[in-house]
Image (cartoon, rainbow, N blue to C red; front, top):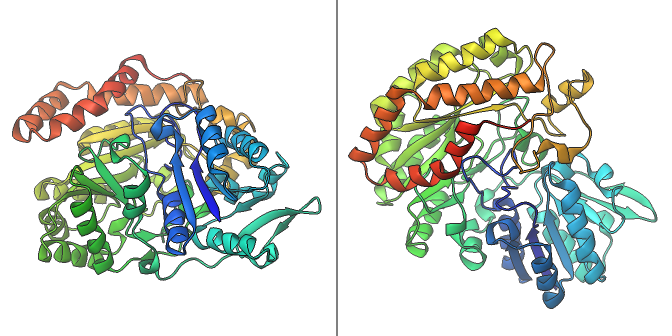
Length: 483
C-alpha cells in the first residue's frame, strides 16, 4: 500500500504545524512534526510512504497534484489547520479527483475539534482521524489493506451510507519510547534548512520529549484538541539517544528545539535530562518551551547541558487576567524566574497576549510594563487567537465576541494572524493597535539596541539568527499590522 502524507500547499511559507498557524512576522516555519511521527510509524510497519511538506518546499497545488498523479497513493493523509481549513479540504478533494481509488483522511487540531462539521463540507473527504493520530492512521492503513471494518478503528470519524460515524475515542499513547525517532523521518524526506525558529540557532531540528500538558490554560490548542492534558514522557535515555542521532546525522544542525508544551513541568526530569546530556557528552545547543518556576540550580545545570533559550508564556501583567485564563502563576514569580535565568546565562523569549477575558486598557498597560521590567531577550505581543475545541473559543463564542464564523478570516489577506475577537471593553482594532505599540515600545528602546549590540559582539554565533529573524520582523515592526 502506498501512503501520501501531505502538509498541503496554501500561502507561501504558511506555518501550519504551529499552535497559531499563519505566515509569521519573524519568518518562523515549523517542521510538520506530528505528520512526520505518523509517517515514521507507518514506515516501521512496512508501508510505502511519501511525506511532502508543500509550504516548506515552495510547492503549489499543481506540483502536489502532479506528485500524487505519479505516485498514485492508496491512502492520503492530509494535515489541516483552522485558518486554512477550506483550502485544505479543497486540496484534499482535488487529490481525490485524480486518485479516485485513494482513501482521503484529514488530521490536525481543527478537524479533531469539528470532525462532523468538517466532513459535511465536502463529500470527497472519506474520514477524519481525531486527536493523537499516529496509531489511528496505522490501523486505518492495515484495515484498508485487508478490506476490514472501519468501525473497528478507534479515533476515526468517517462517512458511511450518507451519515457520519464517530468511533470510540483512542487512548493516548503511554509508552512514547515505542515511537520511532521523528528526526529519522526528517532525514529521509525533509530539508532542515527550510525550517526556522528565531529562538534557536539556524538550522535546527525540532523534536519533542513529551506529549500532553497537565496545566489548564484556556487558550492553548494542543492539549485541548490533539495531545490531551495527560502529561506523558519519553525516557531520558530515549531523548538523549535521539539527540545523539541528530548530532551524527545532521552535521549542519546548530541546535535542537524541544517543542514540548512545557518540558520544564517536571523539575526532576529536567535535572535528569541535563545530567544525561552532560554524561554522554552530547554537544549541541537546545531550546525549549518552559513555565515560570524553575530554580537557579536547575537552570544552571540545563545551561551546562546546552540549553540556550527558554520560550516562556508570561501572557499578561495583570494577575486578574492570568487567573481568568487559568494560568496558575503569580507575577512575582516571573520576576524571580527572570533573575535566575539571567544569572544562569539562559536567554528568555517572552510571550505576551492581549484580549483575554477581563482585558481593558489598564491591564494591557500592565502587560507592556511587565515586559519592559522583565527584559527578556526577545518578546512577542499578539491578540489572543482562539480555536475550536478550546475553552477560550467557547467563552468568546458564547458571548458573541467572535466577529465571524468564516475560519479563513483568522488570517489577513497576506496570511498574518488576524484578530477576530474583541473583549467586552475593547474592539479588535484596539487590541491590534496595542500589540503594534507594545512591539515598538519593547524593541525600539535605546537600551535594547545596546543590549543586542553587546550580545553579538560577545557571541558572533548570534548574528546569523538575529539577521534572519530581523529581515521580515522589522518591516512589520515599523509598518504595524492590518486588522
